[in-house]
Image 1: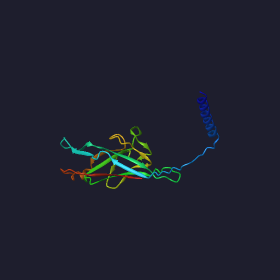
Image 2 (image 1 turned 30 degrees about the horizontal axis):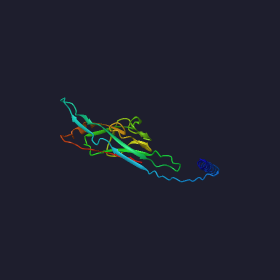
Image 3 (image 1 turned 90 degrees about the vertical axis):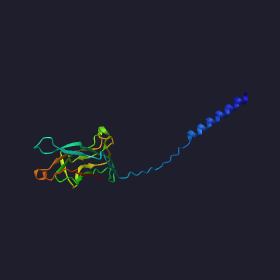
Image 4 (image 1 turned 90 degrees about the horizontal axis):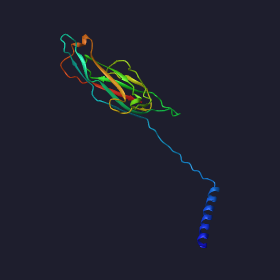
Length: 193
């Protein structure tokens, strides 16, 4: 029993002695530098892929009217904008839109709406330059300006930049150019950061 008490006593003293020695030691502090690189990014995907209109009329003597089967498109994007020396994002990005190969008797117009934060848009999504109906043509027109670092979310038909299209027949002088044919036009979106 004395041997057991002596062993326990010696063990306790060594633990206490260790604890005391540790408590009196000067702490050693090391540092590590963490480096990271955030590249400039501009990623974009167009949503639906097809806008479809039919020109029809059921009343004799009336002009053809466009009926939409699909008249809305969405763009989803992720952007990391360039920054200045202080790290502040530069909101100078744009999205432009153009249409080519449109039948010469037709006009395509659009209203462009910025992404809604309620559906996942975060960051500097910019402002719309086409809040009212704007006719578009083969020359690129600015749809959105002041785009900075952001992401739009990618919920189909809910998040992203929204484009609502309207097709119309140009004035009476162009009406005679219409014929019984299918015409395919191409809409081009360009995201520039």
